[in-house]
Every structure is written in C-alpha cells, then in structure tokens.
View 1 (cartoon, rainbow, N blue to C red):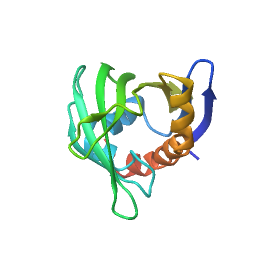
View 2: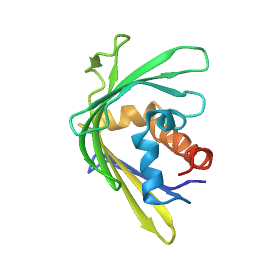
View 3: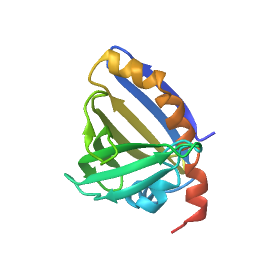
View 4: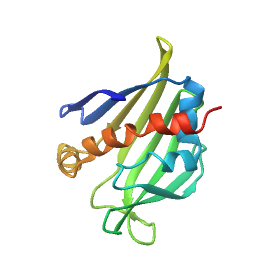
Length: 164
C-alpha cells in the first residue's frame, strides 16, 4: 500500500497522511501540477474527480467535482496559498454548491503537502488542518481519512501510466 501512516491529532486539529512512491520528487510533483493527472487519483476510486479549473499558482484557484456511483456530484474548491516546486504546496480547501460557490457550513481546511526524497523513493506528507475539533470529527465521520488513503492508493498507477 502506498500510504504508510495516518494520524489524527485532536489537540493540534490535524490529520496527517504519509505515503511513499517509487518516483522522483519532480515526477510526483506533476500529479499535483497537472489537472489531468490529478483527476486520475483525487477522490476515492468510486468518487472520481473532474477539475473544471486548476490555476496552479500562488493565489490561484481550483474547482472540481467528484461523481459518486449513483451519478450524484459533490463539488469542492481550492485556493493555492503557497507553491514552491517541486517540494511544497499549500491550499485552502472547502465544499462548493452546484454553481461552484463556496459553502460555509463545513468550514475550510488548510492542506500542506511536502515532498521529500527518502532512500530512492519520494515521501509525500499531507497535513490537513481544521478550524475546530467539531469540524475535524465531522470530516473524519464523513470518511475523509479513508477517502484520502484510497485516493492516494491510485497514485502509483498514475505514475506508471504517465512517465517523464
């Protein structure tokens, strides 16, 4: 399995997922940078993502939706707050309505992704920070932790399919 650990910290209000891949840091960076590659892994296998926009620059935004097995869609958005290729990116993350406008009731999470070379592989550490313990618990109850782990489990196939 690609994911080697996950840790929910209720005091720090974070969820940390660590995964390792047989690819260079630069190659793994591309699965975030290229929306077509991102679509092939963002979201669990039964909820694939489609990115309507992906302006991968600091201050840029991304809009996407995930389609469930029954055809229903769930929308989300990102605002990139820091991008330091090829090792670090940060973004605010939230839910959106059918028009793609932010929905406030679930709050905003902040994601920090770090890529580092480790023993000929690349380790990706993703830390999601929450506004409150209530938000963290709701998101985990909705399946966020398992969904991210399933989604990251698809990255190896993306790396094999599109090599540099």
